[in-house]
Length: 407
View (cartoon, rainbow, N blue to C red):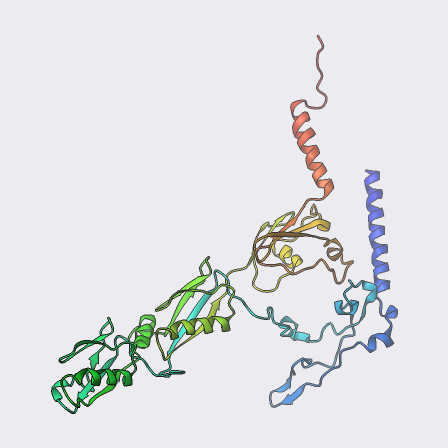
């Protein structure tokens, strides 16, 4: 008992001495003020308006009269090397005051988001009534008016109810029967009819007038939002595990790895092959869920959902924090690369947990699908081994103090 008490006192004395040394190394008296003053960020005067003090891009928000003089460590001062507490300098650590809960906008998470399986997309359909190049070509469902100055009996359709091009792309006219019209321009169809009727009339004087065109675009939009027009003209799709989606009229589209701009270009090029005057605007409705798995010596081994940029220590904290039995000097990260091959690394987070390393290089960002393992300390593994072999094993079968009668 006396030995345990002495050991506890030694530990308390060592911790107190270490804290005093740490305080002396980061005290303002040890900071080179002339050197640090040159490193201070230049303050930008906030713009004034009828709404009062406002922030400026890259500048500071409104400040009160009582400004804090703080010191700290900035990782960018190390030129790529890990900083220590002795490198502390004056640092504007409380720049946003009561607005620190929101903080700055920071840099974007990604330069460009790329689609992956599980992402949910919403495609909005808009009929533009315009064609970027070339002449309009008739499609099944369009209706036209055919008139002849030579014989009114050749007239087909009216301006109110035109002659409809059939699903097979043909129309039926007097004397000639079925004539293919789909894929032709109005001028081409007019010339064809005049040439064919020259067999019966010296000057047939056929004229063709479009009555209702671009019906395929309307059919696609009606399939998306209904004919009433009151429903939202959009369709929601999810990127399947094979990286594809299906859209009305064009079927499968492989979208995995596309940016949103590339996706819009690909979809509209597909639609322009079959229809004109239709513009599709894809929107990322929601991302596929992102998870990391934390296991080992943590309070609550679990799958953690990533709602934003998260570091290893952040993931461990979300899993209930590390247990005293955890070996923080050998935290293992298993990761899958772009081609699903396995890569891994080992991190030393003990200095960060104990407050000895202000900018720990091992405090990295976690990636979707990472597996984080905090193994047990060697002494814990040894204790488990003793428990299994001796306490639960040999001593379980033969309790200590058991005497055997040789007779």
